Amino acid sequence: MILAKSLGEFKEALESLPHKEKVGFVPTMGALHGGHISLVQAARKRCMHTVVSVFVNPTQFNNKEDLATYPRTLEADAALLEKEGTDILFAPRVIDIYPQEDTRIFDLGGLDNYGEGPRRPGHFNGVAQVVTRLFDIVRPQYAFFGEKDYQQLAIVRHFTKALGYNIEIIGCPIMREADGLAKSSRNTLLTADQRTAAPHIYKTICQAKEWKKRFSPKEVIEKTKAEIDANPMLETEYVEIVDSDNLRPLENWSDSDNPRLWCAVYARPVRLIDNIAL
Ligand code: PAF
Image (cartoon, rainbow, N blue to C red; front, side, top):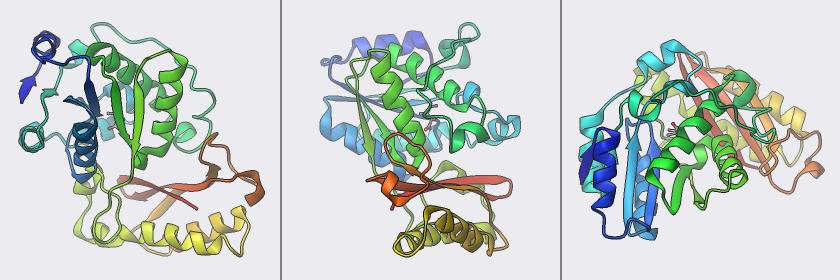
């Protein structure tokens, strides 16, 4: 595996690949876990070469504290990626990605109107800035994103198509710990008590699948919130039920063939997200 820590080093590394037109790309912010590794394995299966980026993108953080405390574990990440057969690990500096301030504003097709969008103003625009920049540098054929960030995946698909990138976006299923907690870099920030409480989120959203048979979307949202908040370690920020394609909230089950519940929950100060097809 080649570790490229600057744009120059990355370009050289990419040139050295025998099939650089057959690259699968996994963009990450590092602190890698089983969820990321499943993306790398999916890329390895489908593509001749696998490129992984590790870059904690400042423009997608609307909270300075979150950016400052985001776990950074490049050495351990590199060891994991090497073991998984990654060809290039691209770990650029901020100056490589943003040689000057990125002022681009993206049309996200309204997919950012709900869920994370209003709660993290500017977040998805920052994701679009960094992902398009990385696409321009890496020029992959395929790019792999996890369904845990379901809204991000939908938004990436949208702007990839709208901007005419010839890149196939592959969504990969959520990876979970044995107790159901969705794998996330932020899980390492939980205290022992919070870690014990956190699987209650998945348990509750699974229960929502049952509630769906008897209750309206609004009632399912209320019951899900109440059940999560009953745990003193957890506090819901939002629970929404949306259509999996247009991401609009549902009034009635008949509004969608493919409803999805998504939520953000605090185990303060850590913020966890999860989602499930209902
Ligand atoms: O999902 C993430 O880790 C990030 O949002 C991404 C796609 C790597 C962009 O910084």
